[in-house]
Image 1 (tube, rainbow, N blue to C red):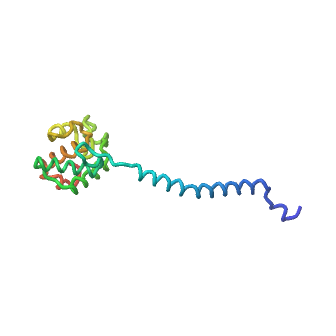
Image 2: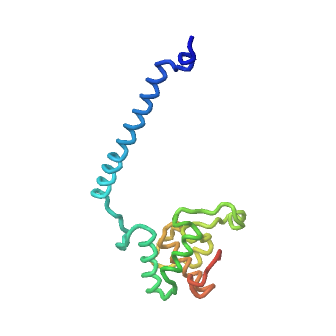
Length: 161
């Protein structure tokens, strides 16, 4: 057997490699088409949900609705102060719950957008908002009411409170 024949690969391996490359190429070509179809369908059919008060049912809307209630009740605070604290405390997740800190160890975990414990939520609940601590507007408004009493405003809170 010559040296050239010894290093020759069997024909079946070359066929498998060709199919694998062709299959990969086909998938790459199909992905942009699938993505474009999905994106256009999503933009044409999606509608933003709103709260009962007509605000967008998202973090921006919850903060704006809370600020409107706070203005009526003379509770100080700004959009930026609320947003900064929400992002630090819960990353904007209204169902966030802290199950590891000292409050949790005492059986009263911090909950919601601004990580309020049940006794604080009850004591600083603002009339006209839900009694559900996980309700985003109720949670923000009660936390801001507490921060106003304790620190002058949520704007003055720059760490855990």
